[in-house]
Length: 248
Image (cartoon, rainbow, N blue to C red; front, side, top):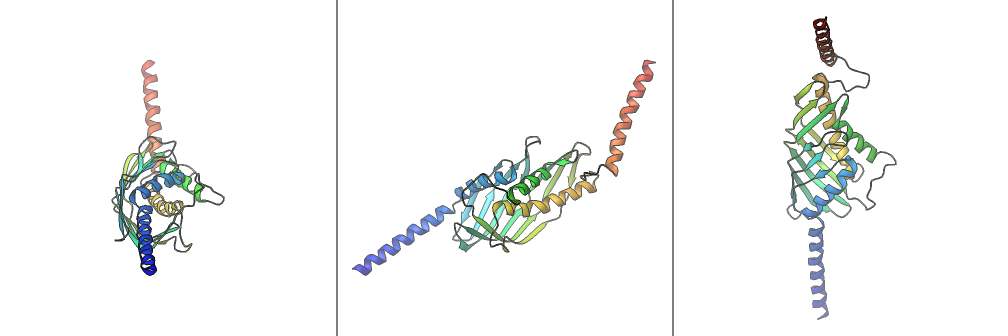
């Protein structure tokens, strides 16, 4: 009889454990975690439409993830990630560490804004660097789950640029592929993951912006950016001269 009671107790504990396990990694909690932690690193609002997880099947999907522009730039989104597919490792999920075998971000939309030599992507990058750098602290005092991502693919990205110097541009950036994110340190914080993903995106977009004439170097303007400014200044001076001549 005692053995039977012990078996029942073990079964009950197992069922409760599975229930807690599934609840802990439910879509709603993951959604809340993204919307809570990501803004602390990015310095801008982050919203998610839905998160669907099947821990037992090792799959998941994040839909409608949007990152707003940082302070100092007009309202709107810097990133619209649409749909993110996840392949989980069910054997390596706990309250402290989550291992993702694959993260696929396909068809993201990036809206870069350039005001002089400042860009919204640079500001986001600066915010992340300030939050994950030496001695940095985030607003939350709760222990944060760490991530390991074996493979991350950022593909088919659509990027537009709004520049006060060059006007509206469309730039192409190559696909980005990362491996073993957080593996060397046995896990990376959400901020560290954001940094590793955002950095190559920022660099590639910046290179394309420079290639099309926008100089983001603090040393000054050159190339066809200088020519465009000269054209604007020259046109303004000619217009002013013409008006003065008419008055004479």
